Length: 261
Length: 136
Image (cartoon, rainbow over all chains, first blue to last red; front, side, top):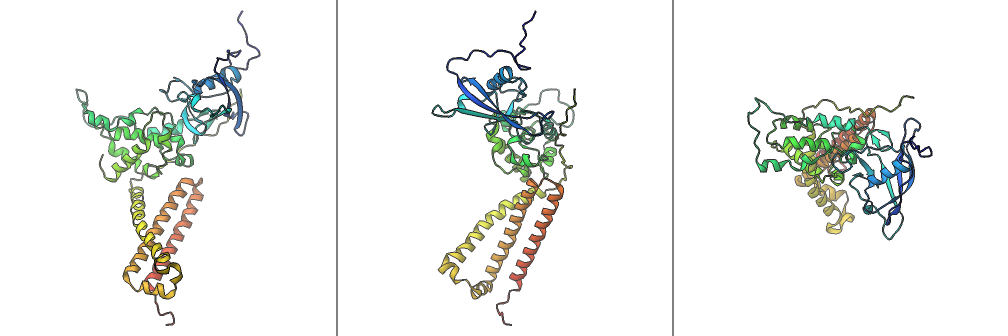
């Protein structure tokens, strides 16, 4: 005979765990949307006990496991590496697994409210879960892979430390879409390649081993390419890896302007 | 189980690359014309509003006197063309960014280009054919 938890909502783990000492009660507002039953998204509030050292992802887990199992979101590694739990937390794009509750707490012991929304500019499947396909389509369109001509060398492709440092910053991208979905140009015009695609193009354009720079620069020279960037720096602020996204976009612009990589 | 009815993902309507440098040149033009306009417009405002009693001395004779010099004609002409093209290109990018439908985008741009052409033609016409002898 297995124990059943008939009273718990579906998907939940049953009775709530004991509240640890030092925990505070957060009001968490989640933008809910279920296209099977609803026409419009709505806000739902939860009261969640949390330690200041908890991550926002822990708060989401608490809600899903103990309060409402139907809350839907993506997360995989939960340690800021895979980039699957990008969401709009208190109005800015962040990875839920990298934001601590103490950084969102209201001062002077006032009650804390945290809002969570799906990232903007991509179609919402359910709750915080969005369709990433338009984002990855733009990523693929800039040909983010090594392109070479001629025969493959028998030895490894040698690169100096200085040449490697040229594109070091843009190798850090984890494709979480925080930058692209924080871009106001992308919100209104989905055909713009977006910061993430340009960052990944930059990673190969400035790689001394790659020979496809001209092709990628041609792609980004178009009306939906780098010239659409309005340098609002939302992308740089949003990047959980600290990539200087706007700077990378400007470097691509400069390469186009002076025909020099 | 009912089938999910999710609207199709916003499919990118990105056309094939045109291999043109138009966006590059318009971006560059915005920077260069902006630099020139700082001098031209601030100089214009200083002369018109601050120097020698400012706006109170401006009348027909004042304008006629200024435009008798090719230097001020050239100043005003370049200010007209640079400002109109700079502003027009800025509005073009705003329309590109914010118009939701292709038809809206098309008609707003037509409106913009027609108004730009009218203002440029009228302004250039006045500067080139200005005649201080109003009675004649």
